[in-house]
Image (cartoon, rainbow, N blue to C red; front, side, top):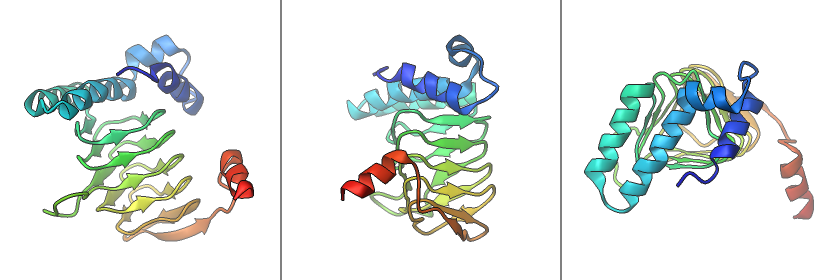
Length: 185
């Protein structure tokens, strides 16, 4: 359940220039608290203890200002910088090494059934106030500008901005790992 906590702490230390130590991050960063509570509530949710899982997630929301539904799937290395107002919906899938800024919503668009929240692939950065809505995918290494509203899939390495969000820039080299993967293919 707490597998990867050291990884999460180290990722926050790497991403946030204001973070000074693992101890500081563990005790003072609501991002790490929300992830820990999410792991507990997700475990209970998967065991079909729905009420208790939701109770814990709402308690975490009260403490941190970050709402992560227990049904959401969260990878390792999630960093929610200044997390107040962040919402991650029930069917959202959040990959590894994701950075979310305050007031980001990974939400649905209505009363759809099934998968109705976004999939955010590894290495994405989502700016303050951005809304990513519906069963869409943000490709690996993509970026969403502050206050953008994303309603369509975003390709790997692209930067989108605006309402509705449109591609502003496309990077072809996402990172060394992605480059190595593409060379093997």
